[in-house]
View 1 (spheres, rainbow, N blue to C red):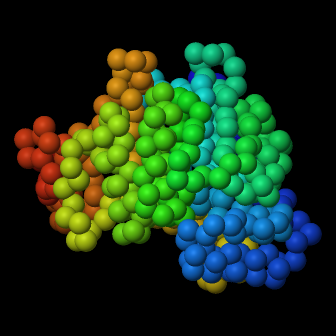
View 2 (cartoon, helix red, strand yellow):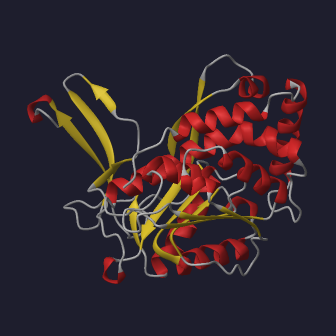
Amino acid sequence: MFAPLHIDEELRDALARLLDGLPPRQAAGAVERLITGYRGNASAAAPVLRDRGDVAAYAAYRMPATFEAVRAALDALADRAPHLDPATHLDVGGGTGAAVWAAAAVWGDGAADTGGARATTVLDRSAPALALGRELAAGSASAALRGAEWRQERIGAAPGLDAADLVTVSYVLNELPEDARHALVDAAAAAARRAVVVVEPGTPDGYRRIIEARGRLIGAGLRVLAPCPHSGACPIEPGSDWCHFAARVSRSSLHRQVKGGSLAYEDEKFSYVAAVRPGADGGPGGTPAAARIVRRPQIRKGQVLLDLCTGPDAERGGLRRETVTKRRGPA
């Protein structure tokens, strides 16, 4: 694997340069208008990002959070599949390319088995978003980012996707109607030689879309490695709770202006699923965690209470609580 790059710093600096010369009030106004548009018309037929000003403002506002969420999901996949080093990466609906920056942060500049930079392709319907993504990537130290292909395609009901070792679909399913969501996940599963990662907002609706995608990936023959400790049915009763995570994001002055408040950070909540093709045909192998902590640990005097999701092969599968006491030492 190539030496790790300071991708997060590069991205932060590149996004800061985007706002040079753009009046803060104009940038904040564009972000607020775009947020309102997305919330009011989640499956819009036309791109919401109309021009470079829109894209620059929205990228500076949203790209850091998307990057951190996708990086956390890819980190979890890499942790469970340590031999996965994708030589090719297809990012579907990638916009300005947060997911390909995240892949560069996790796996470095390329793939050990090819000796060259990772072949990277970003698909999106918005030409201004792709143009800005290409501009941002051109200044990166990562050869995989600099050499990425930025291709305009409508992510419709029957997408034809090129095969790639890694396929990512982040913050896209919420913009599609149900039939198109299902078709996209099926196409991603068919295109993935080694792994698929799907990321959505960490809301009850986002979790529901992830559970739908998880079921379709399993049905297509893939095996879930993260965050779930198994590929069986999710033990969370629908409507009672949802599985989500948080990634800490440094807030820019634009964030503070749009959202108010003075904190230097915020937590991006997200849900995700990472699945791999079984190892017989060149897949990365790997094993899921034995259990996953699904709620904040409760610390009591002399003990810690953990709410766990465990695999069906565990002694007590499903959701359960485990008490860890001082007697267990390192545990």
